[in-house]
Amino acid sequence: GESGWAGWILIVVIYAGHVVVPFSKGGHPLNSDLYVLGMVTHQWPLKGRAMVARTMREYWPLIFMVLLMLSTPEVTGRCDLHPLNTFWERFRFRAIEVVLILALISGALNTSDSHGITRWLNVWALYAYCFHVAWARMLPVPYGAVITYASIPIFYFLHRCRTRSKKV
Image (tube, rainbow, N blue to C red; front, top):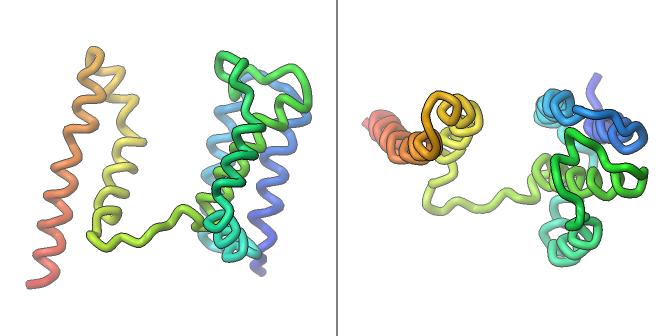
């Protein structure tokens, strides 16, 4: 069957371990867990997703304030790879991520697109996410970033060509 609770259960399962058990190098397995979470919530949207999105849109200043209070600016380094010492510190670090993940998968960050920019920019963002590290490792600094950002007009041009061919 299907259930809107599957996403909520996955969120608890994914993040509870990272808060309770301070294992090093825990960030990378989390990435694959987030892919699974994204696929599950795409197929079976979160139960109460509309309410979560509406609440986040209406009260984002308060949510932002809570996230700032949860932040740990005195901590340095990669907290995802080298976890913090106490349960409370790890909870604060992961709670911020959970709120941001909920904003993404609930649709709270979806905006109107009156100029049609995000359609092709989403495709470029996927390209940039997949290839920016490859460019950075193959080319000297800062040319990897330059190549990644310089590809934006190419994606815009491909989008324009595709939309013109569909109109004909």
